[in-house]
Length: 78
Image (cartoon, rainbow, N blue to C red):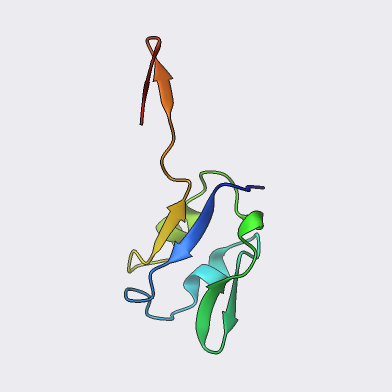
């Protein structure tokens, strides 16, 4: 599981459909007081975007650690 990759919810876009909670097999999310919360970010799998692609229809989920460096031809790019 990940220590540097985890979801963040944009509550201005979130419609509280809870599909991310139902979709995630790693128990990253929970519903607390009728709101989705990221309660176990360490359970998120590196570079998985399943909850965003397979569950969230409002694009309300982004990820910390999304920027990665790619090394090619001896140089680096972000």
